[in-house]
Length: 386
Ligand SMILES: C[S@@+](CC[C@H](N)C(=O)[O-])C[C@H]1O[C@@H](n2cnc3c(N)ncnc32)[C@H](O)[C@@H]1O
Picture 1 (cartoon, rainbow, N blue to C red):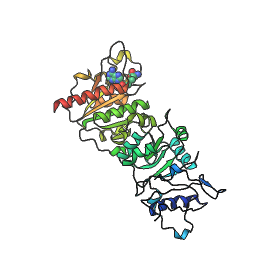
Picture 2 (picture 1 turned 180 degrees about the vertical axis):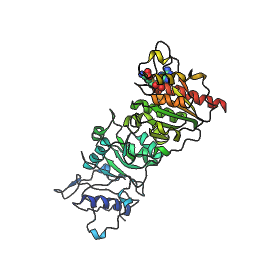
Picture 3 (picture 1 turned 45 degrees about the horizontal axis):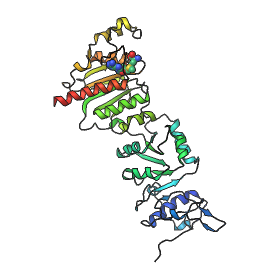
Picture 4 (picture 1 turned 30 degrees about the vertical axis):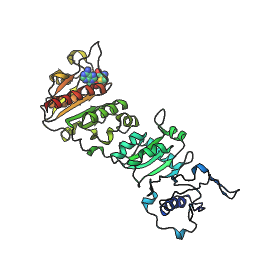
């Protein structure tokens, strides 16, 4: 009996080496495989340098070179699944060890950083194991994991698909170089953009749709999405003027809301009937409570001022939310506040302006804070009405 077979295979063809590494791991399946990479192979001594502490490591590098089987005719048919295996039958991670500035990584990350991710076909970059796990648990399609330590990949093990993605191991300094964060968490996940428009509302959701009217700050939009997700809102509609929902800062501050919340990007005011049920109670969060005839130069068109002034303004705590079949709440953007289109829609739907009274001459709240106060008041009323 023997405990270990060592097989030396040499090839200049990296692609074959990659494929056959995976095949080898399948053949020997439940036995640990020691793959000797080109860096570890010392030709002068005519043999590999085997580092003792690594001998039994059940982690199988995908691109260790040189490695292949000697005669091509002996190679069984390779299927696509084998080429994109993350965990083999024995539970070993199958990964590719990347050199500094490896072109495979550079080209993927350059593509992600330069693309306009509003397009569904594109890829998104998630940083940090928790966000990646949220995406995996929500069945988002994983393409690549870039990591520097196994600890983080191990955390993902229960959620990681066994096939259909690639694990790339890279030096930490290179992950940091590509990171959008000051200190990279050392792991990145690259996913296909999920189909957020068809997410099903949670069972305990409240009959509420939130419209973000030109919210341009990524952190604010992320915070709003996180709050909407937390309160159980049915859907969030984003006007074209909002920051890109797939911006890395939005993704980070939304803390996984992207993978659960139903989101309509590029909401068009002309098609509001497609998203807002006809009997909805429509509200707009409005920090301007004094007559717009005298105070606001922005709404200089008389007709619009009349529209705005015709909408009743009430403090948020006196509104009745729980009687309505559905509620719609509009929040304005950071600099411009509520838009003309919002006011016109609220007027048309016989809606109400909701004000959060402020003291000490404070003009307005941060939009995320204002939204938080309002949606949890709506939730409170629904809970009391049960
Ligand atoms: C930062 S504020 C907009 C400030 C903007 N410069 C203006 O004066 O309209 C962003 C949005 O948060 C909401 N908001 C902020 N403070 C509010 C308040 N006290 N009552 C109701 N909504 C408020 C409104 O929807 C507002 O358009």
